[in-house]
Length: 206
Image 1 (cartoon, rainbow, N blue to C red):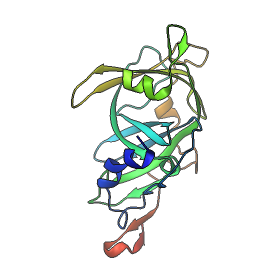
Image 2 (image 1 turned 45 degrees about the vertical axis):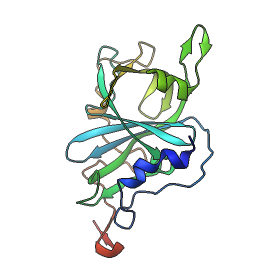
Image 3 (image 1 turned 180 degrees about the vertical axis):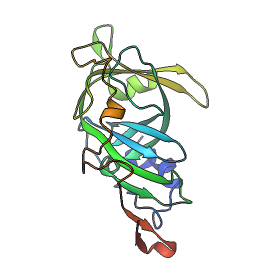
């Protein structure tokens, strides 16, 4: 599947003359192993965990956000693929639009695929399809190994995001409450401003 066809659902849910979110490039071929976690205050606060795979961002919504405690099993719900450009998106999605609310880039960096089967590395697309992904994150807040595992299939699949027990695990440090700021601007989600799109596409300062 090309990145363009993978983004049909993403584009179908949004009106780009009304929202500042990026529509995404037509033919992105980047294979850089990038990740981003965006804090999103929509109808409910959640964290969007995204991994760049085959030119798009594979995405999961994590209601409580990532944890550095290996005992915490964080619910993670798959969402539609997002364009790579979305990893830098920070701003306000206007009222009435899909996902309306404030967004900050809570963490970002690179990852390394750790997923193995029978002693061999499993490509990321195959790992996601099979329902188990292991990655090493090199972010500003999240470091070390994390595992994503699908625990329910069907129309509404459910995954779990769990920190691996390595030197970066820290059960005593609540990273989402102790580090609430954007890694791009240093602002909290309450401080974020952006350009909302008024009727007809005219930008208005939030």
